[in-house]
Amino acid sequence: MNFNDREEFAQHDFRHATIEHIATGARRDLILSISKLIWIKQVGHRSTPVQLRCGGVENLNECLAFFTLKIPCEMANLVVISCKDNAAVLKVTDERSGKELLIRCRDFAFLDSQN
Image 1 (cartoon, rainbow, N blue to C red):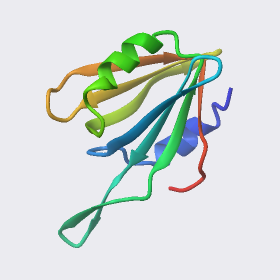
Image 2 (cartoon, helix red, strand yellow; image 1 turned 180 degrees about the vertical axis):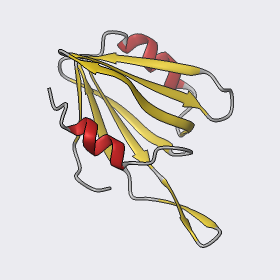
Image 3 (cartoon, rainbow, N blue to C red; image 1 turned 60 degrees about the vertical axis):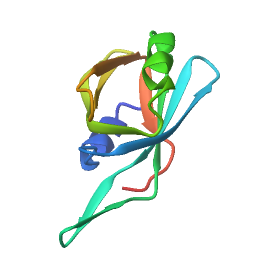
Image 4 (cartoon, helix red, strand yellow; image 1 turned 90 degrees about the vertical axis):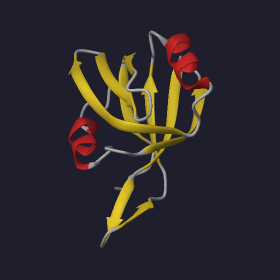
């Protein structure tokens, strides 16, 4: 598991970010393409997306159902709730509805090294 990415994760500000695209991969992977909100003076701009891979997602069907009608999905936030011994929980909060999704996965890693 790339738990070292938890430190990299902390360098990202995912408040008010947008999930532009989702994909699934082998071994129950969920790949989120996320554009962060960047402020330049008083104008908000979307960043080039970063790719966050969540591997071994236990609740993959629940995650896919959450995102099905919401892409692009404006998030209030995306945070790591817990991260230990081959188990991580990330929480996505929908900006518009306030609904929350817990992504229960084995590991997570950034596919891009962009901040």
